[in-house]
Length: 278
Image (cartoon, rainbow, N blue to C red):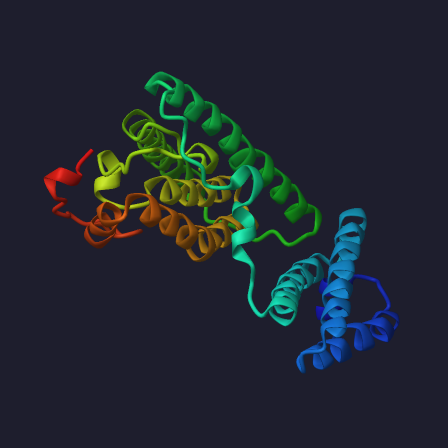
């Protein structure tokens, strides 16, 4: 039963012939800091994950094996970075087009609003439609779908509407008062603590996470919900520290007072100094 769910009709002995030396042994050697072994282990894990994904998509077998190998690949890549660099280079995600850059100050508020809504259409269309639909199709193709209660779709729609309203209102406040947009490469020139930003520091991120989970519930896809949860963990532990370091560097004491007064995720009534309100 477990073998069929993870390997389908593939011969486990044939796979073990390669898996034992290239993953098990290589991982053990990499644990002693041997860099080539870490490369071999991570590379082999990735090859198996991709191969299983192709096999499962064609045959509808071994879907759970794809998921387990995908998780193993992620872990192997983290281990590879730790062996090669001694750390996970999270700062790589804010390079190039995703680097933090303030918007051009001379741009008008209308320009920023129009640009912001263009970003919303692009990012929401990709992250809340294209990717979830692709995940849902693969989830059913790989035969790893799980049942949802009958009331899940209406609840998902309600959460999606409320989260979208939060995201849009936050984006409007950011683009009209911040002299910039939510996009990292066109960041606001002023610290915004008005509207939803008075209650939580990251209303747009919170909205995006809730939207992703709501779409998963609407589509009755636990993998889409997991995708939203994974995105929240990456954002909170990787993106947020980098973003807040940039805000502290640019706004100094103003941002530190705001950070101390307003929580990141859990709303609370905060008394923000009048001189800091925008």
